[in-house]
Image 1 (tube, rainbow, N blue to C red):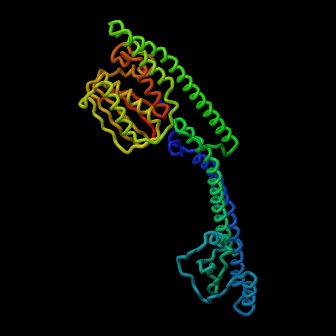
Image 2 (image 1 turned 180 degrees about the horizontal axis):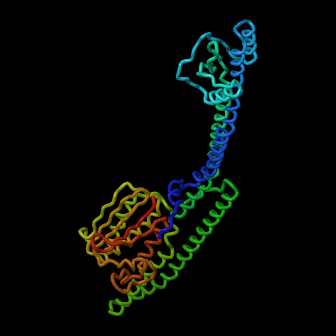
Image 3 (image 1 turned 90 degrees about the vertical axis):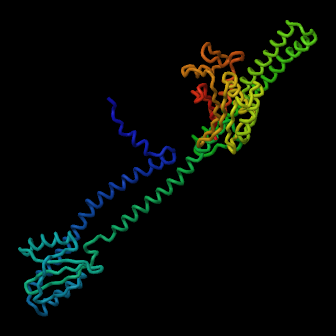
Length: 446
């Protein structure tokens, strides 16, 4: 039984980058906090405040209704109403003999509830009344004994005027915080992005001459560690290349002397066998040195891969004496990638040569898939079982059964090809060909 994983779907929605995730870490608590504050304000403080304002206005309305009913029409009642209008900032008018028409409408729920309760509590009975908004005032009409009492109450007596300011302040402060967070996080994430780009370029064998540490202390330490590591790797590659160049010279010198001595001995059967052995030793020595050197001394430059593939196919066909009908080439032109040209050519040559060695028909194709380029070589040979394909890349290794990739060789062709591809940030993948044999794909990043 599979256990439910509720956070797996959430991970698919969340951004993958450090900038987006850091922004969410900052913004999420602010949004949650503002939601809680808004709930508390509107559900508690705001409702309580509106209820109190409604009760205050209702008390004044009940008082004026009480004055209207207790004092008969005349100068005294008019004087009291005029004094109340000045002190309460109300507009007071009467409609003698007026009657309210149903249905009674109410503009403010808090005023309606407060007036209903106040009339019942202080006057001992309910009074029909209506209310409506009239500009910046609320007009309340109450049914009195001898007519209608009409009051115009300032709207600020019933509605809090600072709610819009509160919301504006809350939203404005959120945008300011978000803007500051975006600027700050972008400046903090940029050095990490530059470090990642430098590491990726160096992993693809490309030069990174202008990279410098900057940013936070931790990022600077990581960048400085990368620079130190890069210097050590470059120094190691340089020393190894120089050493192997000396080894190549030292080993080939006695072989050259042997070839000269054999050339002076005449065309005997034993001499021909020795010459063949020396030629094979030179070929094996070149392959050993190429594998150990890894083409490390060559600088990466932008090149058209179609030209490289055509040169590699021509070199492999010439070495194997293959005719044009054995090798079919389909290379998409215009694919320019920064690579070590001679290294990639050797990688492709090894793969094509291997296909020509074991197949009667060979197809070579170059195509681009998004941010990846593939050089696909297919043949109709015996192929390699799936469980032994990785084994074929082992240096100096010979397959004992099935398709023997290294018969008559040093066992380094595929190893050199994969080493070159991986030095460019790619790889060599073996699979089953549609032609019935082996499919070898050299994948390189754009």
